[in-house]
Length: 527
Image 1: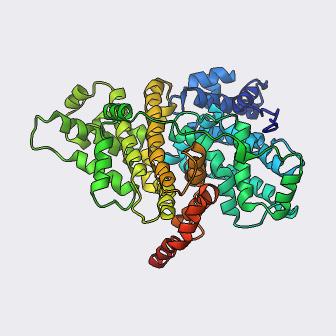
Image 2: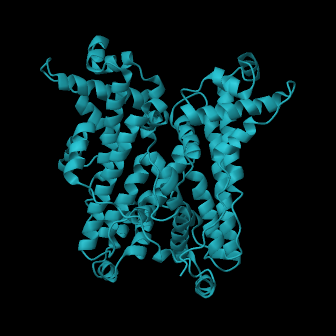
Image 3: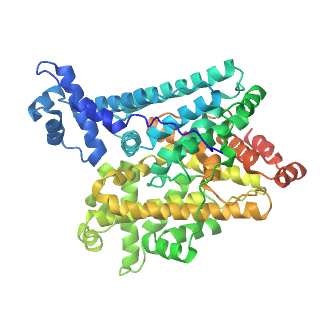
């Protein structure tokens, strides 16, 4: 029997749209048309070499104008960057609106979901949103105006999804409930599989079968929670029934060679094990920012032994991180780092002869802080509360404005010169996350609370909505507010996870042991 009906629509390519704009002919006296060419050229420059490495001469040459003309059209480089950001968002928006239509409500939502996923998985789109996020998370003269541009697109996108929900509600196929929660549930898994993977892991997600099947699984879960009895009846009776997301293969979390992974982590992320031990043996910091500063202050502490090279190296690396986190990656300089570390620039260059080596060490420290914080074990007493906390770790970490500049060093991942170094870190991230979730899900399975082995589908169901919340702030400048609190929102994500994957034993124990009392206790303590 056919498992799915693959869409034949691949969808327009973002970079192709940019090149179409570049191929437009502009008359010498038509300054507006030539501005569009310059912006398209600047946008392609971002996609190829990154925001910081964009070169005016190359931009002018690609646009078919002289540098003198470029400077006349754009005497202010900030204005050029803002107009380029506007054009990039407009291209994305035009593509988003071109989703294929289908008369069946389930298939139509699958087409929309697949269309969005097909767009967001494109490396050029990911690079564009990475650049936009970098601009938004780094204090520059254009940050506020850039946020306005990004937010405008984000709000139009949210309205488009709401309109799709409206049609389904009017036709009686969808329950009209909390629209924000519905948005999280549909778009969250798309976000984490595409832009979330690119931003968090640095490498693309590989579906078990196809991206169209991923769309089917996402929509299946969505309708499990929000579909009406009318929808479910039509779903079973119609010719669309073979598109059964429940029967499609899941993407397994591969088994990890523990010994090899820890050896690799000790070599490439030497701070990580110590940070994990510190979190396990000390009172838990209140938030990610507090943990980060605790770590950096520990590393900055001078050793009484002046010949302790390791201590000086640690101080230099911590100083590079502090300068980045307080002033942004663009303002990182050897002189600032040396002063913060309390060493001479000569000593700094002797220990870290090149900028690349220092950047690598500082990035590795930041990545270690991030991995250790997200990997800490919940101290809650029941699995529902535990997995609520695991979901909330992602929201609280990335919604904290104090950690904004900590993300700015991620711009390294957009620089071609850093690809090899970043690829290595990306592989370690995926393996570390794989081991982490295998451990958590294996315990659930051993206790009889879930019946399936660990899969990325399970991870995406749980933390996809949280990654969307964080991603909207990081890449679109939109700060969503919870109905009550983020913990309660994440309780909803965990509840939905267990509705999909929880066994009858889990649900019986949930009722018998009154696990939901933990939510009421949280509410009582928050009053």
